[in-house]
Length: 158
Image (tube, rainbow, N blue to C red):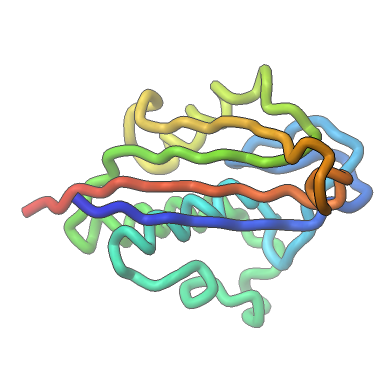
């Protein structure tokens, strides 16, 4: 068994929705970044890559490479899941915490978890996404940013 930890943080700017786990949550802001800025996918990607000792998201999908400008993070996650499988690992589970004052995940968690599970080709019960606030502290608490922490557990397969 191997565990990997992932983290990502993005600024929030004026927009029409926050993309998390490939699902757009209605909101008057959006996440900004080189790709589509899906911080949840990015944190899970780093957790999976770390568990398999395959590097990190920046090595696989550098923000200096124009081909990743506006890239779909859910598709990048799909690619990483395939790489993890090719390295002879099975994804056991993924657990993530989204820290943001808003938008709230309530009402969207099941869709997000199901979408991530389908992307990773694992059962929906093996993906957990939780929402927390920063209690009004720092850039997250002021609504200027959002961050995600994720952990993935892999099992070596023969």
